[in-house]
Amino acid sequence: MGSQVTRRSFLGRGAAAAAALAMPSWITAAPPPKLERKGAARKVIVAGAGLAGLAAAWELTQAGHEVTVLEARNRAGGRVETLREPFADDLYAEAGATTIHDTHDLTFHYAKLCDVALDPQPLAAGATVYHLRGQRIVQDPRKESPWPLELTAEEQQLGRRGMWEKYVQPVLERVGDGQAPGWPSAQAAVYDGMTYGEMLRRQGASKAAIDLLRLGFPDLLGDGIEAASALDVLREGAQRAAMKQVFIVRGGSDRLPKALAAKLAERIYYGVPIVRIEQDGAGVRAVCRQAGGDRTFAADHLICTLPLQLLGKVEFSPPLSPEKQRAIAELPSTSVARIFLQTRTKFWVAEGLNGVALTDLPLMAVFEKIQSTAGRRGVLENYTAGAQARAVTAMPVRFFRAANGRQVAGARL
Ligand SMILES: Cc1cc2nc3c(=O)[nH]c(=O)nc-3n(C[C@H](O)[C@H](O)[C@H](O)COP(=O)(O)OP(=O)(O)OC[C@H]3O[C@@H](n4cnc5c(N)ncnc54)[C@H](O)[C@@H]3O)c2cc1C
Image 1 (tube, rainbow, N blue to C red):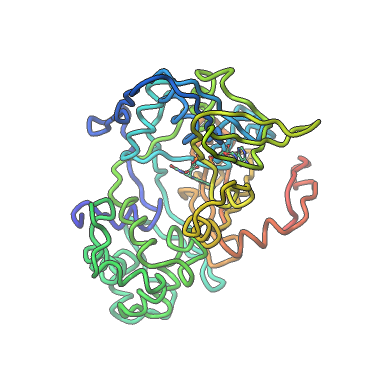
Image 2 (cartoon, protein in one colour):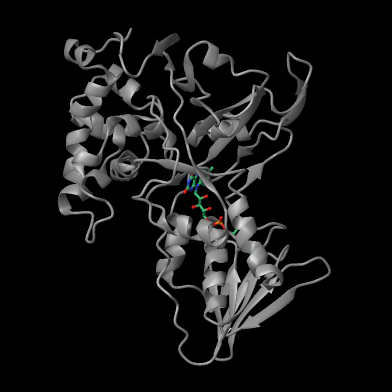
């Protein structure tokens, strides 16, 4: 794994890189194992029309089963949602999933199946802005200047990249390949018992070095480096670092679930939140809340793709096993808030910046959205996670007038 891990991709999108113009040869669009039907066709309910539910429904349908998809909302896609309003010039932003890693072979497979085009995502050239301890620091990722921070003499010499190689790279090698069977090994599992911040301290990083190394991806995962398991951050980081190329769906991520949903057409029922799932010798029944009374769908089997946080609101008869109930109750999830700002020009490009700002301010991070690459206008995204995201989303939404007279919806910061 070590040789594939580059500090550039681990630390974020701060470095310049050229985008591949065509789909590289290492990308596979490996189909899932073919579902062979054994015996008579069965009636199957699929709960949820996110990507998991849509893919499951499609495979079952292809095997000749009779499938009904029950979706609470009035659209398919779940955590894939593209925002097209109120942007001008066909600009858009992603509320949920945005990037497809070159290892996401199933996503490539379904995109190909649905004739949905994927584009390699270019990494913008230019300098990254850091805002740390009240100072604005502009750094060219190819040639670091001294950091105005109380780093040790050695850390100052190493720079951010060198510090990453000293403090993080050796741990990544100890942790090993998170995709390998039997992972995590005993030596990797040790890192599940400490936070990423603790791991950096144990590696000898100074306070200022940690303040610098936490910015970007490590602090945006989970509830930040003092809460998330070091092992989780390292595994996710290693996966990102091993990526050679990231892709986006041309025209917006929602094109993929929309295309899959169109193939399933009338098999999907929208606006039918499941409130109860019953199973007995006769089969399975999903009770859905609908205006005008509950509606029950019956089948031989049910595949449930609801996220755990929502699954906890569904009543099961007979109840789920204590282990499943515990997993539902205890598995944490984090909060993410994204605020989008449409700009008249990409002023940061004129300043030689790449559109990335990593900060210790409550706003955490800013990225230029990939969707804004064509045309004169741009979209900047503010991305917060954990406690900062909860603080943002707790603010009342108001309409206010921006300096250029445009009306903007959002929380007044
Ligand atoms: C902010 C954000 C950014 C992300 N970025 C990326 C990224 O860049 N790349 C990437 O690969 N992944 C990303 N992800 C993860 C990705 O979006 C998810 O892994 C994926 O969309 C999950 O799909 P799913 O079908 O498992 O679940 P979901 O998409 O959550 O689908 C579940 C469906 O069930 C429905 N449902 C819920 N309750 C009920 C009920 N009671 N009855 C009936 N239906 C119900 C929901 O409405 C939903 O449609 C991101 C996620 C988020 C939130």
